[in-house]
Image 1 (cartoon, helix red, strand yellow):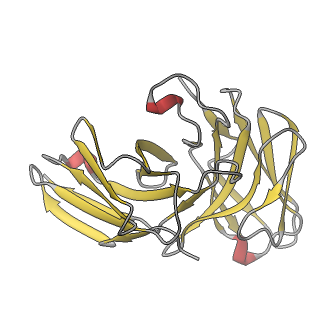
Image 2 (cartoon, rainbow over the protein chains, first blue to last red; image 1 turned 30 degrees about the vertical axis):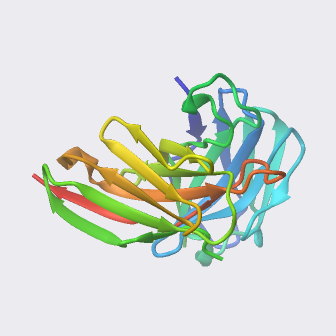
Length: 121
Length: 113
């Protein structure tokens, strides 16, 4: 069974703290993504990575950075947490190449972790 | 910009009824996907329809795609209380998009027992 694991379900941090959100996938996927989800705004892409050590900015990268030192792990870093970064953070991964003939083997289907609800006080 | 926009924003029905959600998008796509999210959890992929397909079925789910109108619909037949969740459409542009998906804001479905 496919699995994307986020290190924490709930996290409370203070303004100005450096925050690390970790995501690990066991599916040998090339692509990994970080989103934040806020009421009324849907999912917004923060950063994504299509290979080890590669990263690309998404729609809202300001205030965030990422690290992908190993294929299975993609970390989101809040250099100096602020209250407007209080949100639900979702990690996802996907194949770059299709595998097999079923939909589940199709490329670009994203598999999500359970999410981390971060509160910055 | 919002690529996928769902309609309605919220839908409340009784168990056994059908639920229809619509999605509109702006640019050309390689495929369109629907995801489900239970409260406070991650998203789960439901179904994918490619740009050259018009209709697809999976169990109680039926998805249609009209590329001329840039719209899609998700029909859940004979709904159950367990179908209560948020439903999102997501579009993939293909090409060099690295598998990026653009998500809509979602439809909140409530199925009353």
